Image (cartoon, rainbow, N blue to C red; front, top):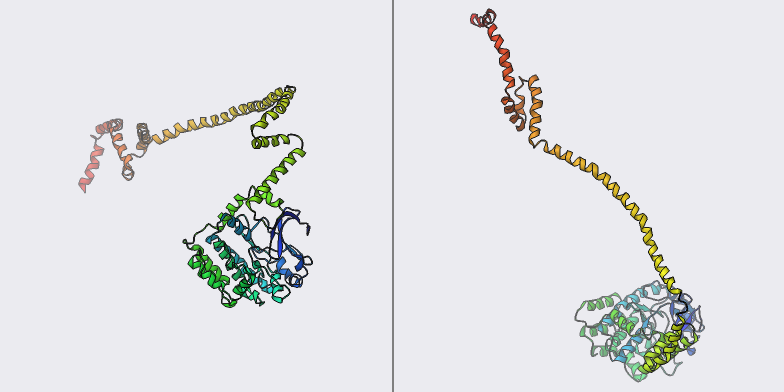
Length: 505
């Protein structure tokens, strides 16, 4: 099958009315192609009905809702660029083989994330004539390795259900009835609450590992879905917490208008996720375990042509043997040193008996090696080449003294400046500063001797300078020598006459 440059990888999954085929395009992106069976090709629900809503299918503009990039309505094939995903049906089967279930918390996360995608699609889809998914089942919900949810096939109707209700088909499979809402069974138009109903049924199977409608007869299951017995079965379900049972049963009411749906359903699920009493591993942990268990067998899954991607232990063992044979053939076809790797694997599987047979081959090769003895000096030359960068370091040594000289020049003025600054700072505190002050005052004292009130207005150090000036004897000696001759002249008449003048007053 090659549609829109898509090449199948060999991985297929059987759907009640179609086959999911994994393909790769020219750029390496993986697609999931829904290929309906031949009996449904040319059906009006897959031709004219799809043409009316193809604009929304190709450009949904909804996060998590995968767009349809290629559609062949004549052959009823629709391609979706999902990448590498695991469908919910594959997860359920993988856990069922081990005897376990996915868990309550992971199931609620699927309802929460899937409910947001469906709610946004229900707001934008009706504007382009698409009112609901039409066939929401575990085959149409994919999960990536990091736990992100993808919903594809939005808008594709459940063709087998339409033919059975119209009377054109005599029989219908139980898998087609198990996830259908009551209005679809009755042939009534659907709405967004129909997708909420299917999501609640899927959540029960994820929690318990057993379908809610596990009837073996399609007729009894048809009546159970039509009469909305799912509510009673959900309330009596074992292994489901009471809060979860009540919430999911309210989303499965017969009347589509009174069901818990839309944002109210999302908020209620979010409240349960905040409750620590809800046990189970989150969806991200479930996917990490799934990826770890399938790392070794991922190549074998692609090469297998089977109806489903879930395998038994016998099938896995058979695939392992085929893979080992393929590796041996590849090693024999290719030449060079690759057969040596194949011989190593044979030693591990066959035992010690195979080792002596292969040892002479290695000895021959070793005997051939001494001929190219000049190769050994070639290795020494390589070592000398490695030593060459050591010679390059010599100019670096020449540069180092140049760098050392620069800071040496900078340090010299710094050393000269430091003692000068220290002397200037110590000048006011040390004794030599006190000797310099009176020398200046000697000059000032000779010119400004009568101005004595100035030292009173000055600070304390000036007051200390006055006794030093008084201690000096030369100034008063000079005054006495000058006053000595006028004392002899004072005996004369002129100075006495000056004293008589105040007497006459």
